[in-house]
Image 1: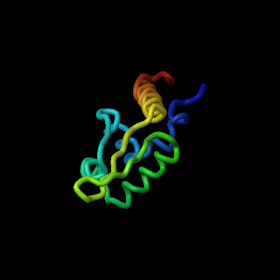
Image 2 (image 1 turned 45 degrees about the vertical axis):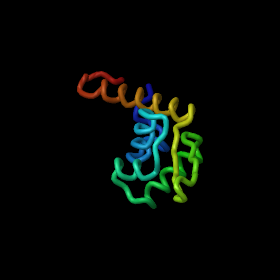
Image 3 (image 1 turned 120 degrees about the vertical axis):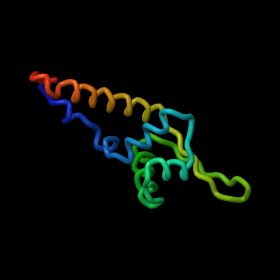
Image 4 (image 1 turned 180 degrees about the vertical axis):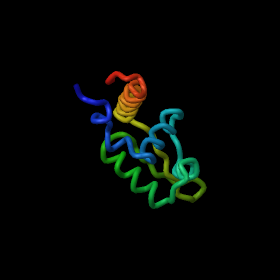
Length: 104
């Protein structure tokens, strides 16, 4: 029997990336500054995590100008929503097995 922790997705399970997907799952889109503030990370750190999620196909990034200023919008893809749901289900199975004396 495989333990649920072995199927956690390394791309998503990291704290900041999990946070990004969680925030985006609650809204249609979020801007870079909001994600940086709510996740309490530096701009460079957030950029790196966004690039990893974008490369995996979990998010889309759109850059635009608003009032002559650059603005970055981030949205979660269908693949990202599915991956987040699977990660949450895996974490639930893992947590449900804790303290039960039974293997999940």
